[in-house]
Amino acid sequence: MTIYTRRFATPFGTMTAAVDDEGRLFRLLYEDERHKSIEGAGDVIAESPCCDAVVRQLDEYFAQKRREFDLPLALHGTPFQQTVWAELQSIPYGVTISYRDLAERIGKPAAIRAVGRANATNPIPIIVPCHRVIGADGSLTGYGGGIQMKEQLLRLEGAPKLQFRLAL
Image 1 (tube, rainbow, N blue to C red):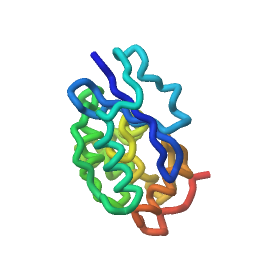
Image 2: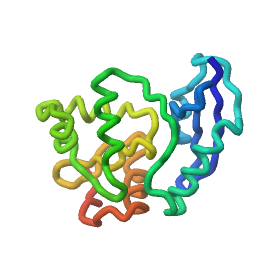
Image 3: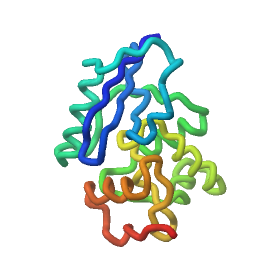
């Protein structure tokens, strides 16, 4: 399999997109996550135009001109992770829900920790909007790009200010 990548600048730092040979986005990495390499997944072609649609749609999102993404995705995970990631994609722009809410939405109200773990392993942040999931008390908890990045994304989307209480 051939993997196409592209590093690109965002208002919040450099990111890397990885698209498979069918044109589906399967990884989106923040700069400090580059250790989560895509090496070994196949032949890697860097700075590929195959990633142009991903970069364009993210540029539009950061410019507040896009609220929904229209990209083919290749989300590889367990059936439970797939269920959680699918539900994440139904959370509207600028809206936050708790991990408990997310567990209830997928019909597993006792699986709050498992939902949190699936959220943490989301391979395509922003596009699969795991940043929209917060603590039950409104606190910002865990995010692969860091709590500050989570806060910045929620502010960009205009999420209610009462949600911006950092967990200590």
